[in-house]
Length: 208
Image 1 (cartoon, rainbow, N blue to C red):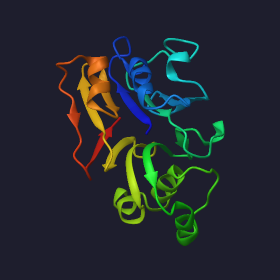
Image 2 (cartoon, helix red, strand yellow; image 1 turned 45 degrees about the vertical axis):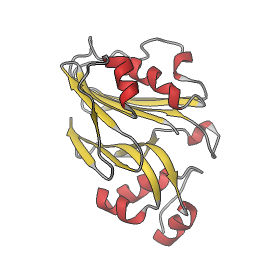
Image 3 (cartoon, one colour; image 1 turned 30 degrees about the vertical axis):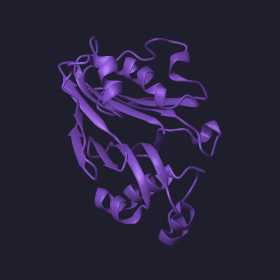
Image 4 (spheres, rainbow, N blue to C red; image 1 turned 90 degrees about the vertical axis):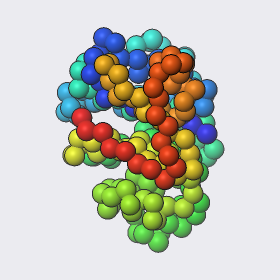
């Protein structure tokens, strides 16, 4: 179980992403990572550390501005314990955070003849998307359960998709937010917030 989250910023002064990242640590305290894209993905900051989110040295690690995008994970380690295996996982145009467990992923790398750099199962999802650029390919080829948030920088899109794992989204005048569970969203945005829980096997795309 890990916490995954993201935001597309509409109002940096009001955006609550860093509160969301800290609230999500209930799902994983072995590591915290985020990628922050400034000005529609032209520049980015990457942070990874083997600490829980509430122990990050600054309450607001980055100053958010309108149009910025942030994606992050609170990690519960199963294998590949080194910091180099922490998420978000990045390639040139794709960034991924994943909660779940994949089956037979090592054999799938070989069967599909995909490159591999890390020890985590999540890399398989990233590589399949880079190869096919279609979410359908992930559903067809990946065995196991997942909730994922994926940034396609080239298309300027965030994809949220799930199979047998929870994933939610919420929008207000400060931004669009993605996160793992309704309860996490309520802790940040309030008990009466209109939080949308994605249906199983569903997907949603947000443009930035």
